[in-house]
Image (tube, rainbow, N blue to C red):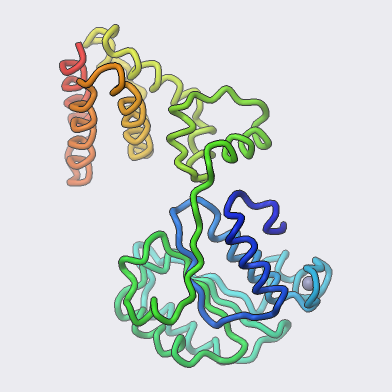
Length: 296
Ligand SMILES: [Zn+2]
Protein backbone atom coordinates (compact mmCIF):
# COMPACT_ATOMS: atom_id res chain seq x y z
CA UNK A 1 0.00 0.00 0.00
CA UNK A 2 1.09 3.55 -0.64
CA UNK A 3 -0.39 6.88 0.41
CA UNK A 4 -1.72 7.21 -3.12
CA UNK A 5 -4.13 4.33 -2.57
CA UNK A 6 -5.53 5.92 0.57
CA UNK A 7 -8.53 8.19 0.25
CA UNK A 8 -8.64 11.97 0.33
CA UNK A 9 -6.30 14.26 2.22
CA UNK A 10 -4.12 15.35 -0.69
CA UNK A 11 -2.20 17.95 1.32
CA UNK A 12 -1.51 15.59 4.17
CA UNK A 13 -0.20 12.99 1.71
CA UNK A 14 2.16 15.54 0.20
CA UNK A 15 3.39 16.62 3.60
CA UNK A 16 4.09 13.07 4.76
CA UNK A 17 5.77 12.22 1.46
CA UNK A 18 8.03 15.24 1.81
CA UNK A 19 9.03 14.32 5.35
CA UNK A 20 9.97 10.83 4.16
CA UNK A 21 11.78 11.88 0.99
CA UNK A 22 13.83 14.52 2.76
CA UNK A 23 14.42 12.23 5.71
CA UNK A 24 13.35 15.02 8.02
CA UNK A 25 11.61 13.12 10.76
CA UNK A 26 10.62 14.76 14.00
CA UNK A 27 10.24 12.78 17.20
CA UNK A 28 6.56 13.22 17.88
CA UNK A 29 3.49 13.72 15.75
CA UNK A 30 -0.17 14.02 16.51
CA UNK A 31 -2.52 12.80 13.76
CA UNK A 32 -5.79 14.64 14.32
CA UNK A 33 -9.12 13.93 12.64
CA UNK A 34 -12.51 12.30 12.90
CA UNK A 35 -12.64 8.56 13.55
CA UNK A 36 -12.75 6.21 10.56
CA UNK A 37 -11.02 8.44 8.01
CA UNK A 38 -7.84 6.39 7.88
CA UNK A 39 -5.46 8.04 10.35
CA UNK A 40 -4.15 4.65 11.46
CA UNK A 41 -3.60 3.50 7.87
CA UNK A 42 -1.62 6.65 7.20
CA UNK A 43 0.35 6.26 10.42
CA UNK A 44 1.26 2.67 9.53
CA UNK A 45 2.27 3.53 5.98
CA UNK A 46 4.30 6.46 7.28
CA UNK A 47 6.01 4.16 9.78
CA UNK A 48 6.77 1.51 7.18
CA UNK A 49 8.39 4.04 4.93
CA UNK A 50 10.29 5.70 7.75
CA UNK A 51 11.75 2.33 8.72
CA UNK A 52 12.47 1.05 5.18
CA UNK A 53 16.17 0.45 4.65
CA UNK A 54 16.04 2.01 1.18
CA UNK A 55 15.98 5.73 1.56
CA UNK A 56 14.83 6.69 -1.94
CA UNK A 57 11.59 4.85 -2.63
CA UNK A 58 9.61 2.35 -0.60
CA UNK A 59 11.00 -1.01 -1.67
CA UNK A 60 8.68 -3.60 -0.10
CA UNK A 61 11.64 -5.97 -0.28
CA UNK A 62 14.10 -5.05 2.45
CA UNK A 63 14.17 -6.87 5.79
CA UNK A 64 12.35 -3.97 7.40
CA UNK A 65 9.53 -3.85 4.83
CA UNK A 66 9.09 -7.63 4.90
CA UNK A 67 8.94 -7.82 8.68
CA UNK A 68 6.55 -4.90 8.74
CA UNK A 69 4.23 -6.62 6.25
CA UNK A 70 4.35 -9.76 8.38
CA UNK A 71 3.31 -7.75 11.45
CA UNK A 72 6.55 -8.88 12.94
CA UNK A 73 8.72 -5.77 13.04
CA UNK A 74 10.80 -5.59 16.22
CA UNK A 75 11.08 -1.79 16.05
CA UNK A 76 7.40 -1.02 15.56
CA UNK A 77 4.74 -0.94 18.28
CA UNK A 78 1.07 0.03 18.46
CA UNK A 79 -0.47 0.85 21.82
CA UNK A 80 -4.25 0.48 21.99
CA UNK A 81 -6.59 1.45 24.83
CA UNK A 82 -6.93 -1.23 27.49
CA UNK A 83 -10.69 -1.10 28.01
CA UNK A 84 -11.74 2.55 28.20
CA UNK A 85 -8.35 4.09 28.76
CA UNK A 86 -4.65 3.92 28.08
CA UNK A 87 -3.07 3.26 31.43
CA UNK A 88 0.16 4.40 32.98
CA UNK A 89 1.53 0.81 32.94
CA UNK A 90 1.23 0.75 29.15
CA UNK A 91 3.07 4.03 28.80
CA UNK A 92 5.67 3.00 31.36
CA UNK A 93 6.49 -0.01 29.21
CA UNK A 94 6.94 2.34 26.25
CA UNK A 95 9.23 4.66 28.17
CA UNK A 96 11.34 1.72 29.36
CA UNK A 97 11.65 0.04 25.98
CA UNK A 98 11.94 3.01 23.66
CA UNK A 99 15.46 3.76 24.88
CA UNK A 100 16.76 0.42 23.58
CA UNK A 101 18.30 0.76 20.12
CA UNK A 102 16.26 -0.41 17.12
CA UNK A 103 17.13 -3.87 15.81
CA UNK A 104 16.33 -3.83 12.10
CA UNK A 105 15.79 -0.20 11.16
CA UNK A 106 17.34 3.11 11.95
CA UNK A 107 14.06 4.18 13.50
CA UNK A 108 11.97 2.85 16.31
CA UNK A 109 8.31 3.81 16.12
CA UNK A 110 5.44 3.80 18.60
CA UNK A 111 1.87 4.57 17.55
CA UNK A 112 -0.54 5.38 20.36
CA UNK A 113 -4.03 4.87 19.00
CA UNK A 114 -6.85 6.96 20.49
CA UNK A 115 -4.24 8.73 22.56
CA UNK A 116 -6.86 11.07 24.00
CA UNK A 117 -7.87 8.08 26.16
CA UNK A 118 -4.56 8.23 28.03
CA UNK A 119 -5.13 8.85 31.72
CA UNK A 120 -3.59 11.96 33.19
CA UNK A 121 -0.92 9.83 34.87
CA UNK A 122 -0.17 8.09 31.58
CA UNK A 123 0.20 11.45 29.84
CA UNK A 124 2.52 12.77 32.49
CA UNK A 125 4.58 9.63 32.20
CA UNK A 126 4.82 10.03 28.41
CA UNK A 127 5.85 13.65 28.77
CA UNK A 128 9.35 12.80 29.94
CA UNK A 129 9.99 10.76 26.80
CA UNK A 130 8.57 13.48 24.59
CA UNK A 131 10.87 15.99 26.22
CA UNK A 132 13.98 13.90 25.70
CA UNK A 133 13.33 11.29 23.05
CA UNK A 134 16.12 8.94 21.93
CA UNK A 135 17.43 10.16 18.58
CA UNK A 136 16.02 7.16 16.69
CA UNK A 137 12.52 7.33 18.19
CA UNK A 138 9.28 8.47 16.58
CA UNK A 139 6.02 8.59 18.52
CA UNK A 140 2.72 9.10 16.71
CA UNK A 141 -0.36 9.98 18.75
CA UNK A 142 -3.63 9.34 16.94
CA UNK A 143 -6.54 11.41 18.25
CA UNK A 144 -10.08 12.35 17.26
CA UNK A 145 -9.86 15.56 19.20
CA UNK A 146 -7.17 17.24 21.18
CA UNK A 147 -9.49 18.27 23.99
CA UNK A 148 -8.37 15.68 26.49
CA UNK A 149 -4.66 15.95 25.79
CA UNK A 150 -2.52 17.96 28.20
CA UNK A 151 -1.13 21.19 26.76
CA UNK A 152 2.36 20.10 27.70
CA UNK A 153 1.96 17.04 25.44
CA UNK A 154 0.29 18.96 22.62
CA UNK A 155 3.06 21.51 22.51
CA UNK A 156 5.65 18.75 21.96
CA UNK A 157 3.87 17.18 18.99
CA UNK A 158 3.73 18.31 15.40
CA UNK A 159 0.10 18.18 14.37
CA UNK A 160 -0.94 16.59 11.12
CA UNK A 161 -4.59 17.24 10.31
CA UNK A 162 -6.86 14.86 8.44
CA UNK A 163 -9.94 16.10 6.64
CA UNK A 164 -13.12 14.23 5.94
CA UNK A 165 -13.35 12.65 2.54
CA UNK A 166 -15.71 14.48 0.15
CA UNK A 167 -19.01 12.88 -0.80
CA UNK A 168 -17.91 12.49 -4.41
CA UNK A 169 -14.62 10.87 -3.50
CA UNK A 170 -16.42 8.63 -1.03
CA UNK A 171 -18.84 7.49 -3.73
CA UNK A 172 -15.96 6.62 -6.06
CA UNK A 173 -14.21 4.61 -3.37
CA UNK A 174 -17.34 2.72 -2.46
CA UNK A 175 -18.05 1.94 -6.09
CA UNK A 176 -14.58 0.46 -6.35
CA UNK A 177 -15.41 -1.76 -3.41
CA UNK A 178 -19.06 -2.61 -4.00
CA UNK A 179 -19.63 -2.00 -7.73
CA UNK A 180 -22.09 0.51 -9.12
CA UNK A 181 -24.15 2.00 -6.37
CA UNK A 182 -27.56 3.45 -6.14
CA UNK A 183 -27.04 5.55 -3.05
CA UNK A 184 -29.61 7.92 -1.72
CA UNK A 185 -28.34 11.37 -0.75
CA UNK A 186 -29.30 10.57 2.82
CA UNK A 187 -27.07 7.56 2.84
CA UNK A 188 -24.14 9.43 1.36
CA UNK A 189 -24.58 12.21 3.89
CA UNK A 190 -24.71 9.81 6.78
CA UNK A 191 -21.24 8.52 5.93
CA UNK A 192 -19.96 11.96 6.87
CA UNK A 193 -16.65 11.37 5.19
CA UNK A 194 -15.86 8.29 7.21
CA UNK A 195 -14.99 5.12 5.32
CA UNK A 196 -15.45 3.14 8.53
CA UNK A 197 -18.99 4.40 8.90
CA UNK A 198 -19.68 3.94 5.19
CA UNK A 199 -18.58 0.32 5.31
CA UNK A 200 -20.76 -0.34 8.34
CA UNK A 201 -23.80 1.17 6.65
CA UNK A 202 -23.08 -0.41 3.24
CA UNK A 203 -22.93 -3.82 4.86
CA UNK A 204 -26.42 -3.19 6.25
CA UNK A 205 -27.71 -1.32 3.26
CA UNK A 206 -31.02 -3.14 3.17
CA UNK A 207 -31.68 -2.29 6.78
CA UNK A 208 -30.95 1.38 6.21
CA UNK A 209 -33.14 1.40 3.12
CA UNK A 210 -35.97 0.15 5.30
CA UNK A 211 -35.29 2.84 7.88
CA UNK A 212 -35.33 5.40 5.12
CA UNK A 213 -38.64 4.09 3.83
CA UNK A 214 -40.25 4.20 7.22
CA UNK A 215 -39.06 7.63 8.27
CA UNK A 216 -39.54 9.34 4.92
CA UNK A 217 -43.18 8.29 4.87
CA UNK A 218 -44.37 8.71 8.42
CA UNK A 219 -47.34 10.78 7.35
CA UNK A 220 -48.64 7.79 5.41
CA UNK A 221 -47.97 5.26 8.14
CA UNK A 222 -50.39 4.24 10.84
CA UNK A 223 -49.25 4.45 14.41
CA UNK A 224 -49.56 0.69 14.79
CA UNK A 225 -47.43 0.03 11.74
CA UNK A 226 -44.76 2.42 12.92
CA UNK A 227 -44.56 0.73 16.30
CA UNK A 228 -44.77 -2.73 14.83
CA UNK A 229 -41.70 -2.50 12.72
CA UNK A 230 -39.13 -4.22 14.84
CA UNK A 231 -36.11 -3.10 12.81
CA UNK A 232 -34.81 -0.62 15.34
CA UNK A 233 -35.55 -2.84 18.31
CA UNK A 234 -33.43 -5.60 16.82
CA UNK A 235 -30.45 -3.34 16.22
CA UNK A 236 -29.74 -2.07 19.67
CA UNK A 237 -25.97 -2.25 19.20
CA UNK A 238 -26.09 0.13 16.21
CA UNK A 239 -28.48 2.63 17.74
CA UNK A 240 -26.06 5.58 17.51
CA UNK A 241 -25.71 5.23 13.75
CA UNK A 242 -29.43 4.58 13.34
CA UNK A 243 -30.37 7.75 15.22
CA UNK A 244 -27.79 9.69 13.17
CA UNK A 245 -29.38 8.34 10.05
CA UNK A 246 -32.90 9.24 11.12
CA UNK A 247 -31.64 12.73 11.93
CA UNK A 248 -30.31 13.15 8.40
CA UNK A 249 -33.61 12.03 6.91
CA UNK A 250 -35.41 14.58 9.07
CA UNK A 251 -32.93 17.32 8.15
CA UNK A 252 -33.74 16.81 4.52
CA UNK A 253 -37.48 16.78 5.22
CA UNK A 254 -37.19 20.12 6.99
CA UNK A 255 -37.38 21.87 3.64
CA UNK A 256 -40.83 20.39 3.00
CA UNK A 257 -42.19 20.68 6.48
CA UNK A 258 -40.95 22.66 9.46
CA UNK A 259 -42.60 20.16 11.82
CA UNK A 260 -39.48 18.07 11.42
CA UNK A 261 -37.56 20.47 13.65
CA UNK A 262 -39.42 19.03 16.60
CA UNK A 263 -38.61 15.55 15.37
CA UNK A 264 -34.91 16.34 15.55
CA UNK A 265 -35.44 17.31 19.18
CA UNK A 266 -37.36 14.12 19.85
CA UNK A 267 -34.49 12.02 18.45
CA UNK A 268 -32.00 13.92 20.57
CA UNK A 269 -34.14 13.39 23.63
CA UNK A 270 -34.10 9.65 23.00
CA UNK A 271 -30.34 9.75 22.57
CA UNK A 272 -29.94 11.52 25.92
CA UNK A 273 -32.16 9.00 27.66
CA UNK A 274 -30.22 6.07 26.26
CA UNK A 275 -26.99 7.70 27.37
CA UNK A 276 -28.46 7.73 30.86
CA UNK A 277 -29.20 3.99 30.52
CA UNK A 278 -32.94 4.32 30.19
CA UNK A 279 -34.84 1.19 29.12
CA UNK A 280 -34.13 0.68 25.43
CA UNK A 281 -37.51 -0.57 24.17
CA UNK A 282 -39.45 2.01 26.15
CA UNK A 283 -37.26 4.85 24.92
CA UNK A 284 -37.70 3.80 21.29
CA UNK A 285 -41.47 3.31 21.74
CA UNK A 286 -41.70 6.74 23.21
CA UNK A 287 -39.63 8.31 20.45
CA UNK A 288 -41.66 6.69 17.67
CA UNK A 289 -45.00 7.70 19.20
CA UNK A 290 -43.88 11.30 19.64
CA UNK A 291 -42.54 11.47 16.08
CA UNK A 292 -45.77 10.02 14.74
CA UNK A 293 -47.88 12.47 16.72
CA UNK A 294 -45.73 15.35 15.53
CA UNK A 295 -46.03 14.52 11.84
CA UNK A 296 -49.51 13.13 11.38
ZN1 LIG B 1 12.07 -1.44 2.42
